[in-house]
Image (cartoon, rainbow, N blue to C red; front, side, top):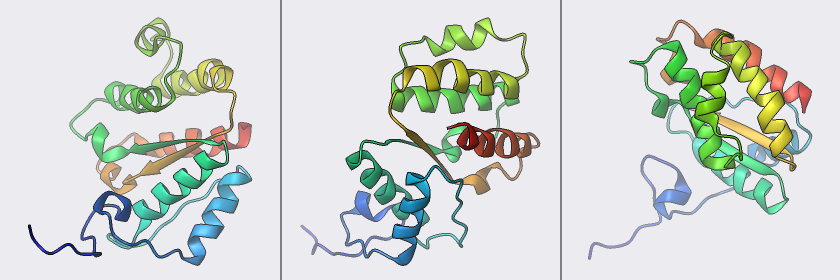
Amino acid sequence: MANPTIYTVGGTVQAGGGIYIPRQADEELLRLCESATFAYVLTPRQMGKSSLMVRTAETLRDEGIRSVIVDLQELGVQVTVEQWYFGFLVKLDDQLMFDTDVVSWWQQHQHLGVSQRLTLFFEQVLLAEVKERVVIFVDEIDSTLSLNFTDDFYRTHLISFLAGS
């Protein structure tokens, strides 16, 4: 077996088993999440954003606040706007395990635009079924730069959802 190391190269520190050194940002992000304040962390790649997010999510869970992590890279870029929004919804369902059948719900509301549909899902399903407070972490936003529809997603959903909580 190779010599074990405390260093983690790429990915989150927790996944690599390395040592996590808390920073001022840890406390600041935690306080913002606890107070339901919209927050974003912008810094170059490989600077610890995902590790910060995972650690904050774990701390919130310990405090009884549900946390969801959605890695936007996993939604893909060779998809339609419908597939992308539904993929986001599926990521929420995978972690929050709604009683509602999200596929049926999404199809039953197909007469609405995807943005309106996601907002309605937040109101009718997420807020109705999840009794605990919920924090949604969105990771790898740079993977959406080539998509022509995500500005609406960021503007409409991330900020307004937090304002409604």
